[in-house]
Image (tube, rainbow, N blue to C red):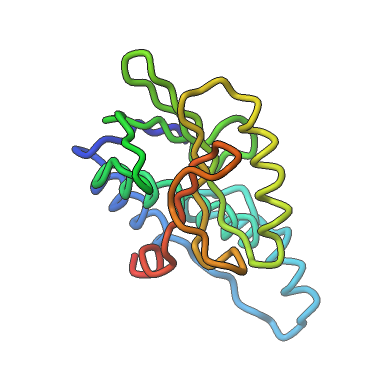
Length: 178
């Protein structure tokens, strides 16, 4: 799902996404734990924002989408990240994507590219490594990495890092309140 997000529509888009999440219907456990685990990982859910994927994959996509939506809302509310002023009034977001860039923006001659993810703490170093590789080759003026703030073992402050990437941690409390 591609979305153009601005300060005028971000709350509406979040409300629409919340409504899609509320439509998710979980299937019952019939007592056979192996069959239930298989269903969680393989059986298409048939409801919510991702009808044709399993509950396991839906959860991965939903939490990554929330990092994108809430991270962009954060950027639209305050265009400064760790002392860096971002000139963008509109962000293009690709929700549920498994390839390509998650976030892009243009304002005049300035360009932004970004990746967003939600992972467990144990997978954070691996995911951050692949995201760094992907973004470091870009010629964009701004390269963002949005992630769930509880993923890194040590606190990572928002702002530009030594590698030129701009980190934007998204607080767990922001998406758990939806």
